[in-house]
Every structure is written in C-alpha cells, then in structure tokens.
Amino acid sequence: MSTLRTGPLNSICDISGLRVGNAIDSKVKTGVTVLTGDAAFTASYAVVGGAPGSRDTDLLEPDKTVQSVDAIVLSGGSAFGLDSAGGVAHELRAIRRGFAVGDVTIPIIPTAILFDMANGGEKAWEVAPYAELGRKAYLAAGTKFDIGSAGAGFGALCGITKGGLGTSSLKLRTGGTVGALIAANPVGNALTPDQKHFWAAPFEIQNEFGGYGISQNITPSLGIDQSKLGALHPQANTTIGIIATDFNLDKAELKRLAITAHDGLARAIYPSHLPYDGDLIFAVSTGKLAKPKDPVLLSTLSSAAANCVARAVARGVFHAQVEDGDLKPTARQLIDS
Image (cartoon, rainbow, N blue to C red):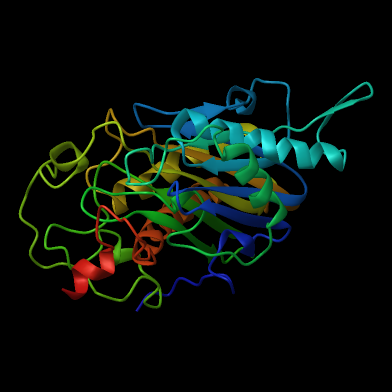
C-alpha cells in the first residue's frame, strides 16, 4: 500500500487559491479548461513533444520580463482553440486583471492546444466556438470540477481508447502540496497491451483509477501498432497540462519543474513524446509558502510532479464517459469486456 498522501480533493485545487473551470460543446466534441487564481501566479513551461501549439509561452522563459500570469488555458480545437484565450481575456479585462501598461490592462494568458478535430464531432462551424468556450470555462472556475470527458479532455482520444481530463495531488512532508491537471490526447496509450491495466498502475493511490493492479504479461513492443500511428490520424494528438505548487518558486525553478514533470507522461503513456505529439506542461507557483532550507526541495518537488502527472493521465482516461458518436471505447469498456 502506498504511503504517499493526496490532498483532500486529490486535485490541482488542493493548491490554495487556485480554481479550475470547464466548458464543452458536445456537438463539436471539444472543450476548454481554464486554471486561474485568487491572484496572479508565477509560471513557466516545457515542451517535449514534436508538434506543439501554444500562445504567450515565450513570456514564461526565465529571461523574459513578465513575472506572473492571470490564467492558463488548455483547449481542444488545434489552432482554432487558441481563440479560447480571447474569451478569458475579455472577462479578466472587465475586472482589470492583468499587466498594467499606463491606463491599459493586458491579461497574460498562456495557452496550449490539442488536436481533437478528427473525433467524430461536427466541425463545419461558421464561427469557431472557442472564444465563447474560454469565457464560459473561466466563469465556471471553482475548486471542484469534472474530470474524464470534460473540458479540454472532452473530445480527446488515445491510441485505442478515449482520452480525458485528469487531476491529482500529493502532500509533501515539508507541508507543501503539488498538483497536476492533464488533458490526455496522445498518440500512444494509457492502457497496457492486454487492455486491462494502466501503465501508471505502480503510482496509483487508493484505487484512484480503478485499482486494476499491475499487468503481469507485457510483451516487449515498440507500441506503435496499437497507437494512433497504426489506427487513426498521426496528427491527431497531444497531451497538455499544468503542474502547480504552493512553494514560492521563481521562473527558472518552475522551468526545471515543468521539464521533470514530463517524466510522468512517459510513465503513464506508451509510447510518449513522439514527433506527432505536442506535449507541453506548464508549471505554476502561488508563492504562498516560503521555501524551507532544504537543498533537495526542488528535486523532491520534481519527483512529486512526475508522480502527479502520471496519475492525472490515468484518472482522466479512467473517468472518460461514453458519448454519442464516439469513435473509440472508453478504457473501462475495454477493461470490463
């Protein structure tokens, strides 16, 4: 039995001051997820996949001027989904949240998108829905939110199953918390080749994604034949997400945290970080806790972040629901078959 302990919500919202909102369009089979907070927060990011899509991420590099952001958006819709940040910006501007330049307030809203354009939804829109979905997701933000077929994970697909939106958290012995929010839409799979277990099973806490245990019969494989590269569209991919902590980290430390958090994707998705994946993880700090005098704190946080990411992937895929017009089964349909 694991001795690791989640926060009370097992969610990124176990980081005090953070809120998450979702919005979906069931006909289009797409959605948007927004992370915001009681105040602006420090952020950085890391891209490991070969085909990312994003907005305002250069501002998060440690050498850039902007030191805090007002929200982070995860969206379906491929490049169209970048419009979702505009809807969030509209609402933030109305309450004068953002980067002040004279009499003008500019909300800073880094955004990452995934490709859900080939999932059976109706994509022949006259006006793309993403700005409105972004606005609705921001207005829905709270400490409790749906996972699975929700938000940016609503139209997500893995290699052989539906994808989904997942979250998780860990409480550290030092008193701080780490949380993850992941929209899983990868080339590869969250399930092992026997289609009965999750790759992330060794990291599961309290049966949070079904308690199916660890597969004992995995045949060595490159994993390509059961991925989207063998079954669907090689461009229809990407896992995006956010890792958060309440420790006061600067942008350089958050950059390192985002890089190591990608290890969680490699633990939960096989294969991962391929040329057709656009895998991107943001890292944020609310700064509510001063860093203890611990020379290995960042290493501890990095390990915890990867753990949370792996579990969030599996939780998102595990909680995916059956929807009209689905092209793929849910993980639970396969496991229970």
